[in-house]
View (cartoon, rainbow, N blue to C red):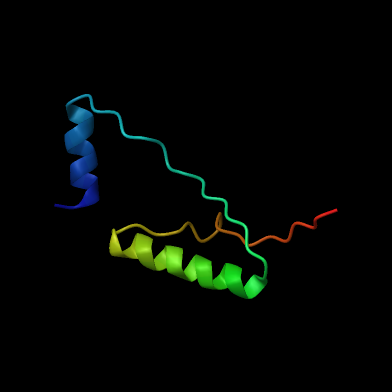
Length: 64
């Protein structure tokens, strides 16, 4: 059964699904961030989900 069918099945019965989760992670290096993004994308892919290509970003935050 596809995820879309499951969602419609739940919604017809009044079951509320949680909103999408915004995941924020901290890494020490850009290499770690790239590896982690790849691992997250792989895990989501195994569940039939995917990272949003525009909204998924790696940013640098300086620590002052």
